[in-house]
Length: 172
Image (cartoon, rainbow, N blue to C red; front, top):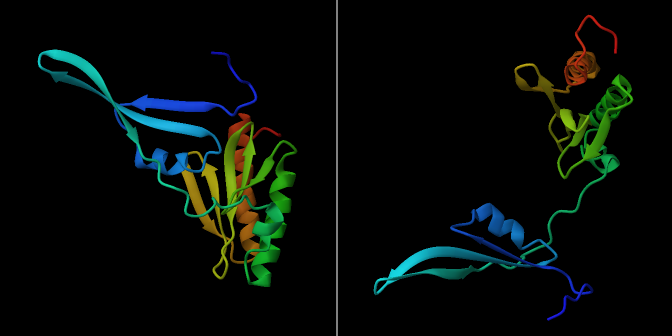
């Protein structure tokens, strides 16, 4: 039998069990994938393996498409919240030229050297909030008015310095 490189790959995963999360996600892969549960059995003094194929549920709807940063900035219905998000996004990008913004389906994330440091989480009718990495973990703050931007930027600066390995007294 020859390999046909023009055909899409087929993947077979064999394990004692699969999480429900993996089974749900497998249905959205655009490749041929089969899941098999493998069990050791003994019948009449003989041992062997039993393989059972796991049913992957059919897609009910397509997965959510990725949003763009402008999509996320325009998500709030409140014009003031949109303006605050735009100002904060611009300010975070100016903290360091190596900060990489990226959109997800729900928030605008910011990372440095592949590590996450902050995210802006716009909401349709409620006040947006910001998650920032601190020395003791993640902290969430509301972005209610322009006074919050300075407080948030101070924390983003600290997160940036932390990821860069720069002491608070040093200049970046």
